[in-house]
Length: 288
Image 1 (cartoon, rainbow, N blue to C red):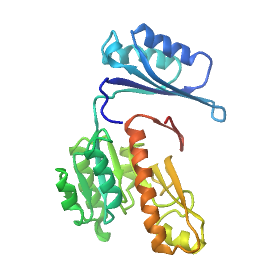
Image 2 (image 1 turned 45 degrees about the vertical axis):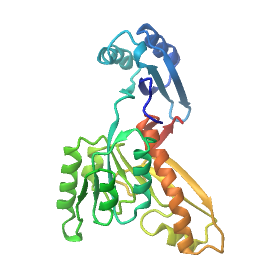
Image 3 (image 1 turned 90 degrees about the vertical axis):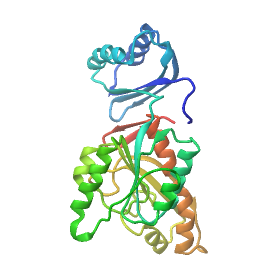
Image 4 (image 1 turned 90 degrees about the horizontal axis):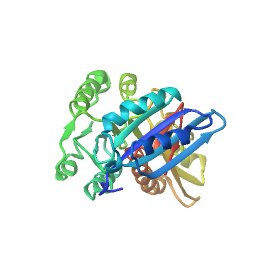
């Protein structure tokens, strides 16, 4: 989605399911003069939770956004809601992490440059130098932070300092081939987005294309998920697959898989930026 010509406020909530949630929230928005431009709901019978995303025409509200938050907090408390409201006209700051591979990073930079992704990219951080010229061509600062095996902690401390300095709201691992330390996972819960070159939960960890080739699979895929302390086991945001056959070797699988990786990561990031993803436990509700 390009930057909206008509800004909205995105009200995202989840809470224990019960009668009257939609009615109460809709009436509250109406009482504030709010005009709903989009509404999405999902009730999960297994967990007993209710998920909701509303877009409110910003110019329609009779109160400020801060006042809306203050008043809505009372209703949210009544329903035990986890919630947030975001101004769609304010782009999130997205820091991208990358290693050697360029395809996911190049795709994201192109989508950002063409305004397909509405966000700011204050910098790209990489543990290798080879992507510097591509990043700087886009006018984006490039930080080279090597991650030596004998002193990874110092490298991640430096990387964390850069992320904090740029006030990042989202961090994207565009084929960043390093395991994120637990402290960083805890500091940015549901804000670290990874692309794994496999259809999880199959072939977790390194060399998934080789593992897929050795297994003789007929489908390969990619998975974008939030990063947690458990390797490649965070809440899944987006997945896709492509069919392969016995004539394809491992290099063919890598070539075909790159196209899937790019599109899956871009869709996941876009849904995240548009507040369409709600995390509950280790699962997600994604309002497309």
